[in-house]
Image (tube, helix red, strand yellow):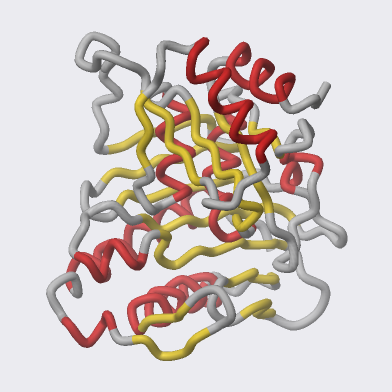
Length: 275
């Protein structure tokens, strides 16, 4: 069965986002329902994921849905036609803390086994609090609810979204210091929603998004990756490979660099000895 993936994932993200906004002040949706080794699942995460799964089911598709909270969910009978990668609420801790920076992320494509990031054809990141939708994929690029204004005259130094462990390898720290001196001694922010921060880097609002902890999962990055690719912005792993060549597997963990500035990426990877 053929489906318009662009229309479907935009509608799902918008519907799920409306639900999240309606529960922003309901304390019961902050409740932790289960704990994992590195993360927790809250009521809001589980219910948003249900909304998205049901929406895909209602299309009558045969699909595999890679979900953050429930693992791999298969719908329909027979060989799958489509694959979805869903993060029901990227930045759920921000939701709990009342910080209005969290998103819903969905990526989709034809089913494949194995499946690479480059096989995903459509991606959406929905900025819930701002009611802004970012889409990239087979239908081109659409940013709805964001004026995309040039901020270069409004900031005194470039900004990098950076995630780094306190016990990071000394080589990483030296590399960061070197690019810090070379690229205008940038300011650093960590905002708590990787998908949104990847989109901001792809738009050029950040000089770069860098998560160097080897902790990012496919749910965190799939939707934003497709948007970045549609904008012709490369997403690199820390070993210098493009994310598009990596397998979509819930067992994988990634360190990523996203930037419109190719010189910045080449300089940093070069300082780490990556060609």
